[in-house]
Image 1 (cartoon, one colour):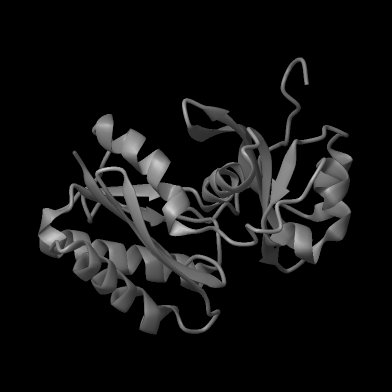
Image 2: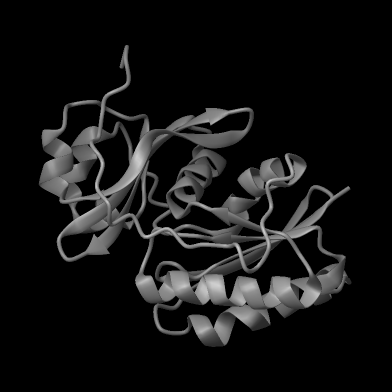
Length: 226
């Protein structure tokens, strides 16, 4: 039996979720400028609804980025504060992975291209495929201009998810369908990866937790046989 919480404020959405022996409680609100006021009350509401205290948790997952610089820092700061006070291990989960997991949850698709609007004419993008119930990275997460991504090849994906597709509609040429139900990452979709990492003992201390901003570019490469 496990008790695991996830929080995220890395994009326009603010969310928290609690896994309690297979049942999920969650809060989600799109509020671009209200994260600092919303996230801690969300956490407390979930704990109260589940009838548990923070110290009862087995761990805390957080959206480690990519996303807005301020949003990622808020998530990390709140996660570190909660974890330090309750002596909890932290699990940093990719926001792009959470988008792919959300698309799978909504539609059952198992191959997803995630894209988040990175502002300044760029997108955060990554490719994921389902493996044992968790969307796993198959194409490296990176930051690119949309035309750079489109020029990298013509590979198509089963589904696309994220705000990058809303801002840059030309990206839809790379997907068979767009999961409109998942414009932003949601904390509940970080739980499958976090539960896997919890079982593997991959948690880190509050002092060791780090964000990911993806400003170092790598080359988008087509996988063999795709």
